[in-house]
Length: 335
Image (cartoon, rainbow, N blue to C red; front, side):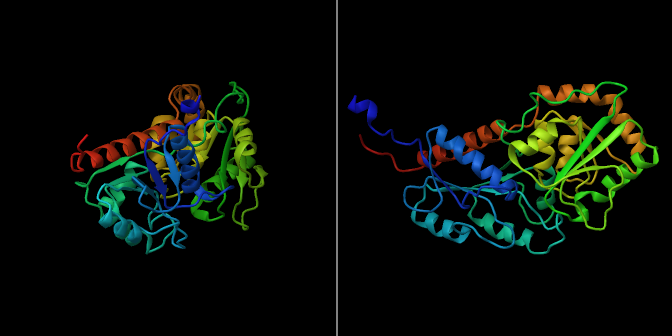
């Protein structure tokens, strides 16, 4: 009994450089909460500070405002005194997304501490390779995934031919770059009768200058409330520009919704090519194609959707490998 009750030694210790938060704090916070819980369930110790016990740092960023639990400079200093410490840098941003000029440089500077770099899309990797990242360095692409206990297709609405096909989009930001110019075109086409048998739901925030004509609007929401609204729809539309690896289309996909996507949506295009139809200036033609292909696309989404489970497993395998390789490089111990 004493042996059974004895605390089991963790597989290894992973330190995250962000503090988890409750509520809508972006894709980085969703990644952090999911992966931290997954690693704990897999027998790892998880903490949010650096000390001699840490085997691996799983690092990301907190935007241009900072707010990290510890810096990449601290990681470099810790590695100098602990040669078995490894660092993964997750890159989920760039300057193109919000028209800034400092993010790319911050990411490049932090990358000095990284033993392995993870990009959240091929598009984002190629973007940074064209600017500063050396593609010969160890790196991989791991797509974002949402919490499958919340975002899933079970109980979702079923679209039938001859009934209105309901599109949905959701955004916390009211920046026009989130695709509101195209959502407004869809709304106008529905109102004018050019787009028949179609509905549009907009969840979250939108620019104050937009006066929706037919779109049904909902205030910002998260978690089960958001997933419930998504499952009432039949397709997800996104025209958000230069997205590194946006979570909003992933949440829609995991609720069983195929994508109608803009060709300039960055990493989202990689999902759209698998599960969707490209949105063009001719919204009526694009929507007609989407409706014609809807059932086949939905089957693809249901068969092999993005998943928080798959994301966490990929990170766990990477963390496990890097720690094992680092320990193998240590001097042999006598038994």
